[in-house]
Structures are given as structure tokens and as C-alpha cells.
Image 1 (spheres, rainbow, N blue to C red):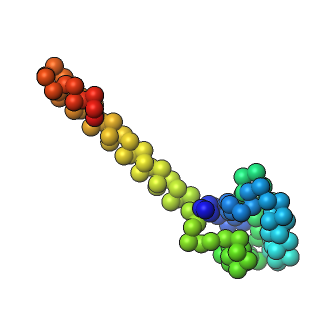
Image 2: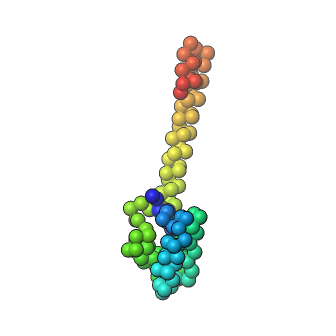
Image 3: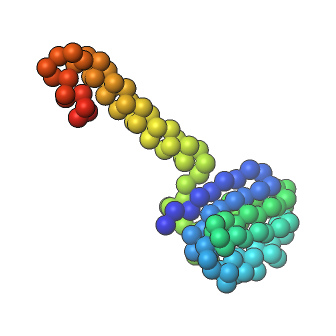
Length: 123
């Protein structure tokens, strides 16, 4: 169960797996946050499990909002993935795939026309 987190001043988006398909959990989160000073709006999408909180950064900080969610078992910081981490992981995956493809191509070209050319197919 991974929690996606994206935050810019005034807007916090948290993907909370337990909200997906659970309107009661979405209502509970809205109820929990609606009386917090500085929070302007709360939108919970039960199809995606995404909760968007718009707030006034002068009055409340995203860390405070996350702390409330954490205290009420809606957010697990240890399983949170930020946008930076998600992009880095995707880049790493793409890099490995490109590296493997290039190596396969290079071996194929090197063995082309030799009796070992069938090995290139296996790579």
C-alpha cells in the first residue's frame, strides 16, 4: 500500500489507498479536516483514492495536515512516495531498459556475420 504525496504551498495532494472505493473514509477525512483553521477546501476522490486539500499557508502548513491524517491512521509516512522519488524511480527503470537494449544491439552488431550471430538473438 503506497501513499503518493505532492505538495506545493497552498495545495496538498495525498493518494490514500484506503479511500479508494470507500466513501465513508472520504467523508471521515473531510470531517476531520474541515474545522482546521486555514483549510479552504477538501476534495476526496473515491475512484482514485486521491485527497486534495487547499489551504492558506500562512495559517496552516502541509506538515500539520499530514500529521492530522497520520494521527488518525489515514497516512503512513513510511510508505509515502513523493513526486521527486516517483520521477527518479521511473528514470532509473527507463535507464536500465535503454542500457539493455543498447547492449543487445551492440552485441548483435559485433557478432553479425559470424557463426556466433545466433547469440545476439538471445540477448
